[in-house]
Amino acid sequence: MAEAVVTAVPGEAPESARVFRPDAQASRFFSVSQLEDLVGGETPAAAALPGREELDVANWDRDRATLVGTLFHAVMERIDVQQPEGWGGVLEAVCRRQGKQVAEDDRRSVADLVEAWCSAPIATELQQAERLFRELDFVLPVAGAGTQPHAVVGQIDCLLVGVAVR
Image (tube, rainbow, N blue to C red; front, side, top):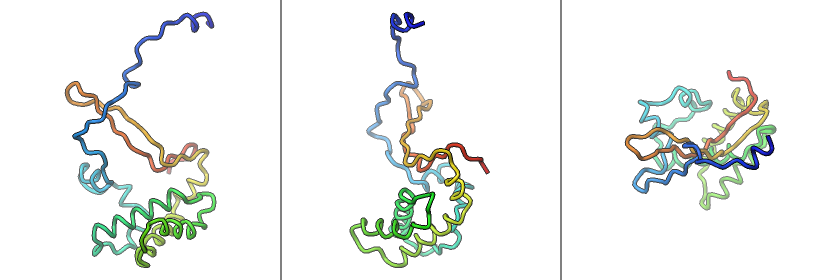
């Protein structure tokens, strides 16, 4: 067996290992809202997010919605899932990094979302996970029209391994 490995001649890499060149004309980033629009409305998972129903977002403009979402995402990237009760300090640090004063209403909205998340079943699932990956880069080759290869490139916010699916 060892001789076969040493004398083997490498062949071409499989299709899945090819480098896909980016299309300079294509969109680079898509928000969750844009993806929901593409599939015909809000996804069931997004509709079930904890704390979402408590937020009075009807009068929010796009900038406020973006800021609250960005702050919430930044807190969730940094929160210690084994000790989530320390999220208050994380929120303060994230707000300081904004470079501008974050309004108290916006801080409260983020705090409401984080508190709801901490009491949701997903928080327990994260604590029980065998392995937890955050901001995991991925490239997923997909069949495209014509001869040009296509790929979906992005980041998975959180991937759990070894936890029972509810």
